[in-house]
Amino acid sequence: GGRAFVPALPGKELCDTSDEALVYDEIPKRMVIVGGGYIAVEFAGIYSGFGAEVHVVCRKPLPLRGFDDECRQLVLDNLVKTGIHVHVNTSPVSVSKSENGTSLSVRVRTAEGEETSIECDKCMFATGRRPNVQNLGLENVPLVKQGDNGKILVDDFLETGQKGVWACGDVIDRIQLTPVALMEGMALKETYQGNPTKPDYECVASAVFCQPPLATVGMTEEEAKEKVVGEIDVYVEGFRPMKNTLSGRDERSLMKMIVETATGRVLGAHMVGPDSPEIMQGIAVAIKAGATKSVFDSTIGIHPSSAEEFVTMRTMTRRVQCKGEGVAQSKI
Image 1 (cartoon, one colour):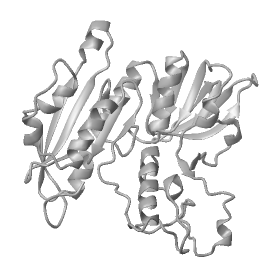
Image 2 (cartoon, helix red, strand yellow; image 1 turned 45 degrees about the vertical axis):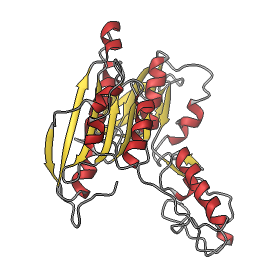
Image 3 (cartoon, helix red, strand yellow; image 1 turned 30 degrees about the vertical axis):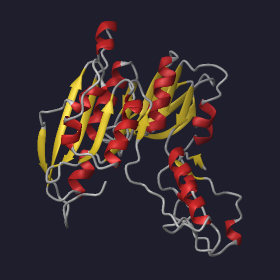
Image 4 (cartoon, helix red, strand yellow; image 1 turned 120 degrees about the vertical axis):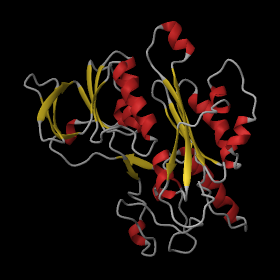
């Protein structure tokens, strides 16, 4: 498993993590969330929905590092439209009790060096998770090696340096997702039973449960630019879902596909919009099976639905020259 990590800074003992934020006795009127990952974004939506004034302090220009940049920008725009205060390019300096003794003052600094304070009732740090390897007695097994963040080092078959000692899940810090840990456990079971099996990390779909959610599988455009040999075709559709139009909500949706020009293979799919995790689970099967853009184009859509956009995107938005080296036929 993993445990929440809070960086060393003055006043860290006054702060909470997602563990405490799940069991507050009452809803804070004002809340500061430090971090820009999926936990920060999800909890911002939860507490804003409860009526709290929420401030998100994010040291990068966009939240959700590692996801597709266009999707990250839309998530940021949607957060702001719901009334969440997002302080980008900003880092925490210290946390202290306010003069009244009942609230907190979070001191932050922008990338330009300007400092200001945000008053709040609760300050939650969502600054990542570390492998939970404390009290396992690893110091008694010298051949079990650990990485710089404490993760347990394993080979391709999840065995440590000590023969017969295996590890999987968040403690090996590969992809910190519950379904990935389950997959690793199943691979380990096969290996135990005499069928050596490597964990398969290709096409791992994931989602961020913001409002509306973001879901993704395969390569982002930024990743494809660095890894693909040759060119990629990028297809993007942005729209306002009908239910939002009828209700007057201003949240927008986005769908995006990354296609290898030389082969037509779909390398990645990304969506911000209602039901995107449900839609992306099916898309993940197609991409893992090696589906090409022509397969998507020849598939009949379900109308009216958001999902049909993935099989009706005919107009390429842009073609991009990539920096990869070697042989074409990219591996996702």
